[in-house]
Image (tube, rainbow, N blue to C red):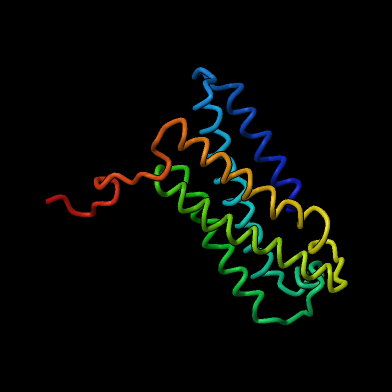
Length: 172
């Protein structure tokens, strides 16, 4: 699934959610819904698709990125994408500090991936999944998500707080 489609699904999904929701569209609610959709769809679903491609269609994905086929790093990139994808999907059920952790980890991976794409394009690799939309989306998604996370923190004062009962496995 192309990065532009993932970004479009994220934004359209959040807008539809806000439109059909019976809850008032306060600034807190709008930021919360958009943040959730960026975490779940852009990072979660997007990374799961990336994992699927890097693991099961490694040679085709390598060609689309401009890499040589058969690289063992494809599996490692797929594994990283799988972890990010799972964390993104789990944001549906886990909130507070989990959102911040997911946004920071996934955003760092995407942002540095974007820097890698810039380096590769400067070296002459202008393959479809190395330049263009992929390159831009690797920066847009983390920057927007980080901005939403900071806005959510300002509005609620809770984005980075993990209450002790949220992480306690055994109550004493």
